[in-house]
Every structure is written in structure tokens, then in C-alpha cells.
Image 1 (cartoon, rainbow, N blue to C red):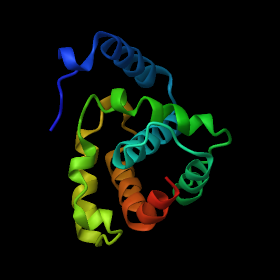
Image 2 (cartoon, helix red, strand yellow):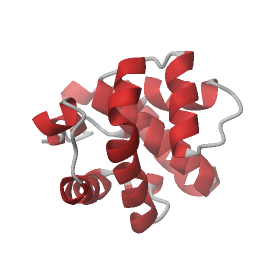
Image 3 (cartoon, one colour):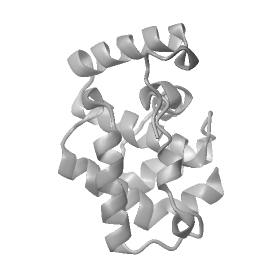
Image 4 (tube, one colour):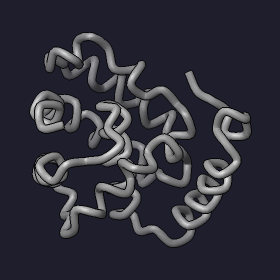
Length: 149
């Protein structure tokens, strides 16, 4: 389920901020920057985190190979994840099997494709790469990262 970014519930400031993010993201953010923004904001949506602790950033960095040198590089996407995902309820896609930490490859692949299809176009850095990143997040690290949250 998603909320239209032009709806009143999204808020005028969030609308404006999304437009700025979209413009800057599409024009000036590198592929690596979009990848960090995608993974960190997705993780924040899945776990319902508004702020990432240093331990979470370190684990996310190590598991996903993000090569983040400053903690703030992952904290910002987490803080604005609701704006980045425009009210899309990504966590509703995460089923009971994910919350137990047991995810099979077939289910992770299907969920990954769905999540990538819902991601903002300006955040894309390649559908196959993004799907592989989501699968890795779900299969390899979900339970460990959730414990760190």
C-alpha cells in the first residue's frame, strides 16, 4: 500500500523535500551514493528505525559492503526513509517468515523484485544489482541486523 506524495497526509514540507531529493539524487548522487541511500533507507523502513545506532551502521556496512567511512552516511537515509519511500509501507511486504529470520531463497527473490519495483526511480542503480542487494540483506543479515537495531 502506498500513499500519494501529493496527499495532505504526506505534508507540504515532505513533498518539497522529496522533490529536492529526487532532483539531487537523479542529477548529482553517484551510483554508490544511491546504493547507500537505498539500502540504509530500506533497512530503516523494514525495522521501523528512525535513527541508526553505530552498531547497526557497522553491521550494515560490513554485511552489505557499503564502504561507508562516516556513520552519518547511513544515518541520513534512515532519518529521511519515510520521505524517500513516499509513504510506501515496505514493512508490510515483509512476512512472518522474515521476522523469524528464516527466509528461503525463492521467497527472498520474489520479495526483492517487489521491493525494487516500489523503489523511487531516482534511487535506482540497476534492477538486478538492487534485487541482489535486497536478497543479500534478507538472506544473510536480516536477523543479525534486527538484533543490532
